[in-house]
Length: 273
Ligand code: HPA
Image 1 (cartoon, rainbow, N blue to C red):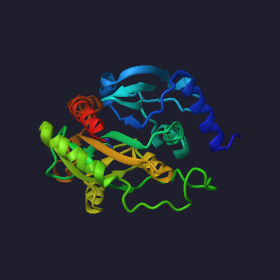
Image 2 (cartoon, rainbow, N blue to C red):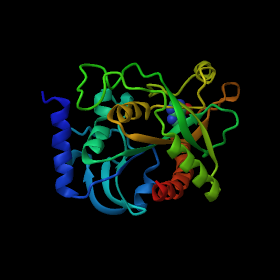
Image 3 (cartoon, rainbow, N blue to C red):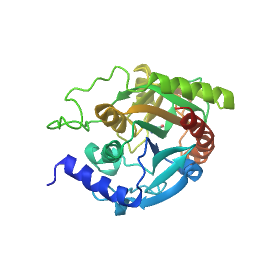
């Protein structure tokens, strides 16, 4: 089996053969949040099957392609659709695209996701700028022999979300009058949603929203030395004493509102950074 560095090189070469610019910003667009890619002046679009060693998205609401082009004058790579632990992938597979983004030249990673809101002050379709996270996945993308060329054995996690990028996101949200909270994301394995007892526990841990993604990519981004900005869209309210059953269709409906907000906010942020 090829070692990870060789696979990263393979994938990067194929992308470079379709897109010759050096990207500065990588974007991972979460469930129902791919609308932003319409704002990109697209120079190349690669389906995940075209890229060696890329996993394929198994979730219907994720399209599964890499869009390369210009957003607000900057070169970006945007993933329409990401990979999740619950789909059966290892976390090394889930985070492989982040390695490739780094190899191609990215310095900044912007991640988005749909999440359940546990902070009682949060409203449906609010954005939350991720300030910190809690990892409750039963695996870690960095487990195994460390390749020192890719990053340190024990990466620091004192500030995985870049304070300056958080400030830029907050001030732009304010000037666009987009409701944006700042808080803590907790990652759970899924695919089932949580019980009331679990929401109570997760809230007690100090998390504001809960979702099934993002943390593995952010761990690898931190390992690789990328600056990270993360956004959650609150797609359902997870108040344990007033919990209603959720349906995927409702989550996607609310994600569309949040996605429209992100489609206005992220280009402004990218213009500034
Ligand atoms: N829990 C976990 N993941 C989610 C949720 C939730 O309530 N909503 C959207 N993604």
